[in-house]
Image (cartoon, rainbow, N blue to C red):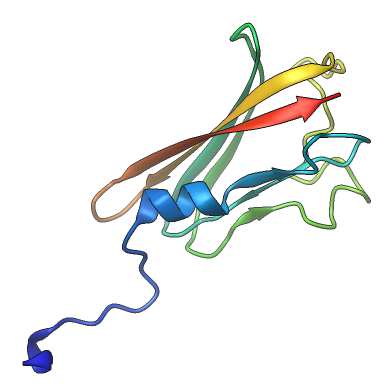
Length: 129
């Protein structure tokens, strides 16, 4: 009976659920200047980020481009050294000006580039006290 069950290694059964659980911003609340994102590339696909203020205005966007499986966006330990790493957000808008204190919403989107062409999107809140 079990001979007819296909086995696939390394593929998630709940792509968008896993994407949502494994995507985060740290530290939160965001004190200091070394904030960073962790966004998993669970399959081959494109990752992008847009950050909005409480009024709904987009203040920042970043296209991380096409990523291979496992080529995560990960700023852990990198943003305290340099704020230019792709996963860092040094509290600035798209013009390079420092953003005000408040609540921000990071909309992180992942679109697979092969197979089912699934699209996953998650919103993470960021507090800047």
